[in-house]
Image (cartoon, rainbow, N blue to C red):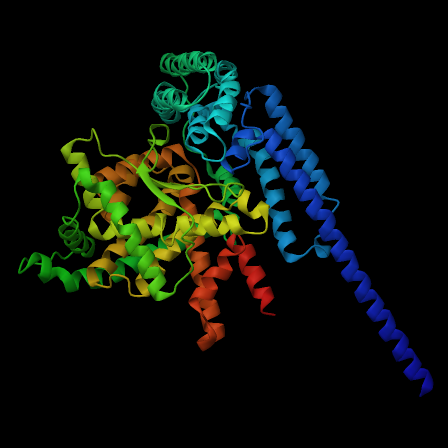
Length: 581
């Protein structure tokens, strides 16, 4: 009996010692990994000064990287070296948050190697070479004095001619679509140097000699940009690469970019199924609304035709081209008030949101977007970029405004601003993990914005049959984004088939469908991020509601979910579930 007791005591002491040793080992591993992350980020910014600046880290603002062979070699050496460094860490010894950071760093590094060695977009995408946006961000910033920013801009402009010389050398068989975009965006970005920079120089307190030197460099920059655009226009490209990525590259890019629990084919099949479900819901609502909008007119036998006719009538309720931006500005305070009243999530009133006309250097891909300050510049402005309808034909403007009618414009503002992108990105900047902030996962970011659209309507926002019908139409767009992107890049979908999907099955206006076709020819995988992230977030929320029953708190879920930064949904889900164990 005494021996048994003694054995039990010894075993208990051994277990306690082992447990203590493991805790100490884990703490040591986490401290070591935190130090590694700090070094990793420093080296990342040295290699990517433009990216650093966009995140609010301005130590290397005066540097413009020349995208030549030497720089590509540096990227590969950095990625392979850092991947070797990661092998030193045992995942089982890291905290949950650090495990997520480990996965995100590893994904970034492997993606760099994949992009350089397999995708090779530097050869076929001339639009990836454009200096205007980085200079515009410096001019629009408020992180330092105007004079300090102008001095960095002056130094940075020195490399612009060499930058475009390297771009020309890299380009081999560019796609027609990316070539056209590169010409338009680069020429559009000239205004940054001819107009914006000149105005800033005139406003500054720099001496005449410094001002003249900056303006002279600006003239040289404009010459280099025009020369690049002219070179692209005259390029003898008899065998342009197809804009289609192909099934193998697409599947790999999906895994790197989306980082989902689904693969590309699984989310494609899920989107096909969801499209049918939404058509059923839309038919029920449209059939109910028929007499309100079409009176005694005979109902068509084709269900999609019936839905379209009702949507077309409701879509006539829209603003004018002149009031498009001001209408958006007016709705933001209303959304903030609603979210506060319903206690859906805390919105920090100290973080400014500025609605502005979309800058020329951004034009050509999307009609509305958010430009948020990085984690190093948390108090900077968040810009809601609104595409201008100036110069559009009356027919195109009318088509566009019917798409963004009085109902859908509100859903767009939920998505882009409150409580969508703007709100999420403010939370992301507050994340204690710099990795989760700077390596933000696009599917989580877009998925959150799409999730909030449905969440707001479920909470009672502007509740009506019309609003729900238009929401389903909008959500159908998210679903068809995935179908279109996958079909175009892996199934050789033609433009005619794509436009049919968007106009006949997703009820989009011609102008919107044409714009989306253009977008799918210029991007790959990104259009899948909306539906994939939304599906994972919404399903996770419903899982927790079922498990927690009456104790589930929507606001707590939102704030807890966003507290992990812009990490992939699958990792946030793991962390939140583990906390409850």
